Image (cartoon, rainbow, N blue to C red; front, side, top):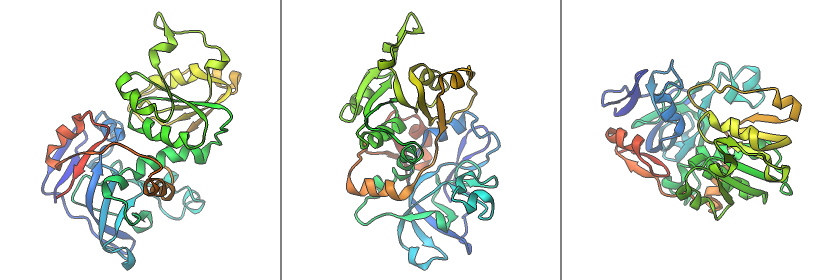
Length: 321
């Protein structure tokens, strides 16, 4: 089987990877499309140093074998986190926090391969009429939707998204649906152009003078700040622009540590909410109804993975053949 394997230091293209198996609790999926996430790039930088295996976690596939006969032949997407099923987290709807969980493409074999097996209860059929090229955005869009599940966004207030990348674009479209006054702050004027139908935009440099954050009035700051930069500088900037008693939603995952002055959190009564994976069914619904829209994925053959990872497209990925 063709697969893209992480050996602890680098990605390796293989054509001899073992075929995964269908079991009483797991389905065998033929991968149709698989997208590269920033987390995959961070893995190559050492984000998951103990991981060895097939990379990737954003996919659309066709169920080939399954203990659930109704799924066979169906086009599906799938969640990342497979818990033990018996602990307090799994029993209370928090499977993604199970201490024994396995995460596809990060602690168990993922979807950058011709086939993958996944716990059947993590699969979601793709609605009729939704193309694989659109459905492949389900997982990252679900992560954007998790924000509105965790934090009540008061549309009478204001919010900022820090970052002008792929996840920031999805978050922006989700938050725009709430009606909140929204500003996207990024470093690249060309990227910020695509945000303008959904939010006001500003350049990161506009907030600085002589290399330091300039004095900001309360009106220039934000009640909600979503940090989606993918690097450690984002949280520092978020703390600079959030209002007292405001909320920071932290989305970035990256290899490395951030050195923070935590005293500002109790002094200014700032809340920080960590946010990761989210609900698939609402994401599929938004995609099916066309209420969110994303540029086409730039697709490559799996053997051309170096070009795919180097792509500057909105989203790059693999079409399995």
